[in-house]
Length: 458
Image (cartoon, rainbow, N blue to C red; front, side, top):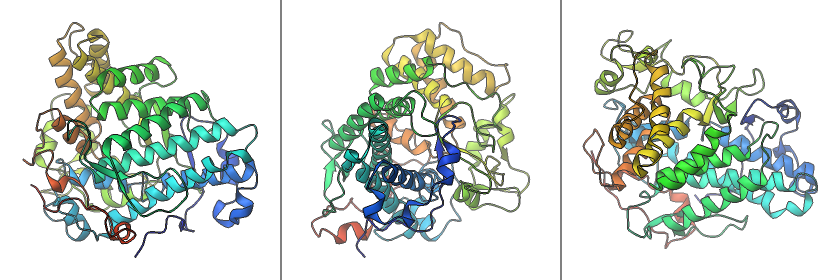
């Protein structure tokens, strides 16, 4: 069946995606769903454009994207889960041998491009805007960049796979015209992501009443450049975000996924009790307080966190279900979901400092900020640490900090592109199975659409 990017599901609830606690949330939640507004009315004026923009946020926060599916699929492709008992779509993804079928990943792919489509509607109708023209343009470009970044990481070999990044990426969609899918190069995809984000950071305000801000654009730029192994720019943007002093590290790990929310979040999906309670897919696959969850961790991973004084081991349990290691991160009826947050910026800045050999004292302090919380003040590294020691610590702490949050496979690919194979399942970083197969619906629109090579890996 051909994918129809105009057919946005009518079942999405209105949600608020907040970068910081803002005053715009209540009005957003009171707004009518844009799905109930005819298109000719929805884009008649600035109010219609705001509703259209809201609908893009709805998809981004939904279960097929950051409400859980993006994290789950990334985790299954990586090396921290024990997936020996997974079957069906999950078995294919974990087995690193997906097909053009598989509704679980295909629904994610479709919704990512649906969010892009909504952002493009806003960008094509900016003449309807008045006082919020720049703001709406910045938000739309941010969402479009975020979505293209997610899909290129999963459906294409990473940046650095070829010397000039001319290898096939994903379709770039920068208009509402529905053309047959054509895969741009990875370089072209990253170029449009960076272009959108650089425009967004100039158009978006410092605070935005609950929507994406310039700090969200800068934080995403830091992540994009980091994934490209462009450490000069990754340091530049992570340093700007940290230096803004607008975000502070959470004192405890219970805060990151809590109903009250994390103060270190730069861009997050907010829980609004009774109106929108995100993360159902995360709870559905990871929650462990009531029954054995679908997704469990390897003993090897548990041993890496089950060390003296590491308070993070309290987030895991290897006793409740004998023979299984589960996480407690999502053992709550409701919580907010951080998408971009300060812990990541700290570790990006630290590793980037180490890779460039510059600002090593800053990088060492970033590591110590993470270690201080993780080991309850019992562990640190010298401020005059070598670049090698800073990098080693940054990578290890990242592997623990973001477990069950969909980060690990990006690290396997990023570091692999630098010539280091770190996959604990023993697969090469560039094996075909680490790249998802495009949905049949995408290829149905263009018989010449170039598929990813078939074949799995360990």
